Picture (cartoon, rainbow over the protein chains, first blue to last red):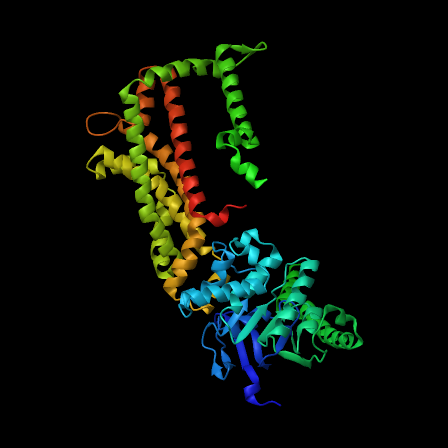
Length: 279
Length: 276
């Protein structure tokens, strides 16, 4: 069951500290987990726990101080097209049209013949439902369309892992729901390895095959849950008793972790101390 | 709706445009008030202190028609425009790469930003005496001062613009395989373009201010000089107030035309900023 080849990604005892020698903060401490091939692994954690740092580590934007991250058996040494991130808010280049954004990666690398690239790009733009917006600029698209365009831009590079960093944050409730449904269908149609980072528990449960709950800062894995809701899924399943049970359990842990940061943080006590000394 | 728009002639569309009409009405209202103000010494029994001393628009218009027949007046336009254009172009050619270099290289920034920031607050006009001594001809010293006027603004805008590019664009490009040169060419350059045009438009305004002052100080004469600034100065010395106002409005128009030109070029080269 835990054969190494099942794992697309392995995070082994990773620690990451920021700051200089006078003022250091360990954001990630002894983090270990694995991401199964062709599965969706969701990562949730209390806000400010260091989720973005985890994303940056997985994508190779940051290097771990200790431990290592393996992608398909090889250590991650820097950003590459094997692990692509769909960013919070949007990171579409505002000066490129949808089509130009989607073809940005392959054109840069020159690894696709022009005809093949055009066909692939048009197909992907179709898949995400943006055919009519092919030649529009990002600012002319709605929030939901921008996320779909960005999804297309990542998909065309055929990454080994897609890392979604709170991709639906900032969308209104209705659009968010539509995007979740769209993303569910997309994941279920094509087998792909996804890491989905979010602060929304329900979103994580309905999308995920496995769910990782991160602890408060310095963050590490607090709980690993297998989500065995049947597929294909839909958003109504959230009200099923199984989903409710997952949610209740996860919520309990998250609440506990969130509470720690609320009363415990070092900055907080410093402030209180300084304040009381003043008085 | 779209078809109808395309068939209507551009001029008709312009006059139907609310903003355009508002602008025209505002200018007309201003001219009328000015005319009334300078014709009558008092308004409804209240003495108007200054406006009565300025030539009314009708007198200015008459003077303009007269001045328009002098080759010297158009020569002044030509001289000032040439100086502005040259100083501005040199400022762009040096300022844009300089700003970009400071934005992308921390060693370069560490070395050149402090002296740049010390020189920046010195008003271009404070350079006039030094540049008259330094440069062999008056023409060159006026151009140098004009260049300074635009240079600082352009550099500061380019630097700020390039530094404020969202790191996510760079990261996204990097993971898709961009080299350092790709990042510069495909992310930093287009990402800075809006700031370059803002810097250019503001810098252009400053060059007009500076060139005029430079011309006034340098005076006319055999070796350079002249220009709209000198035109105003000599009209003032000759006591012809109508002509002073003609000169002032000429500068206003020249500045407006050049800034509009820059905005238009910006509009053409940044299609993603044109919404709908």
